[in-house]
Length: 168
Ligand SMILES: Cc1cc2nc3c(=O)[nH]c(=O)nc-3n(C[C@H](O)[C@H](O)[C@H](O)COP(=O)(O)O)c2cc1C
Image (cartoon, rainbow, N blue to C red; front, side, top):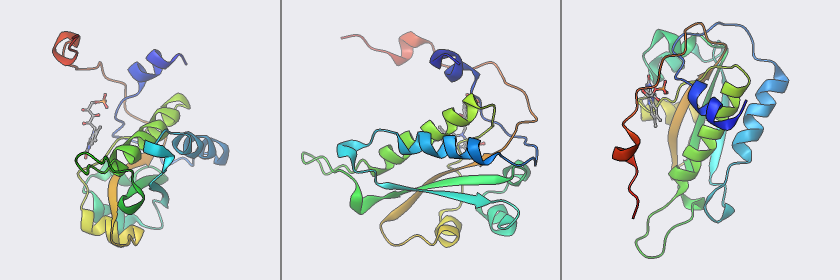
């Protein structure tokens, strides 16, 4: 799919089949995340592939939506703050930005394969730390189900370009 078409066709999937994801497709999805650019190439993130059925009870506590546990897999990403590049002028750490870019690569690659996903930030971070066994300094950033959709693409609702873009 042409990139603009992919950006248009990807949508937040909130209903999934339980059908398994083929290993080769999962490999492509994870490879796309690994190829993402990161500040100073620090790659300060770790990805987690979670079998929904094995962790269903914890996942239900992580994010309280029925559709969150419908897909066979859930992926999560954590930013490793001590590995992140920090801007010397103001000390801003870009590890969370790096993790977000990698996660969006993952989600776009899934969409290109016809596999649904949905960015989830409204999870309980304490449950995320427990599930992923995160050390201090590692920050859970996002989760998504990975599964075949049963809902339908919706027309995009976006601010007009002239509200979002400033030409100087
Ligand atoms: C950083 C981020 C966090 C999000 N968190 C949630 C979430 O917790 N739950 C949810 O249902 N959708 C979540 N979304 C999905 C957005 O609601 C969705 O992307 C937006 O409404 C646009 O719709 P679309 O993705 O179908 O184009 C999140 C999206 C982003 C980028």
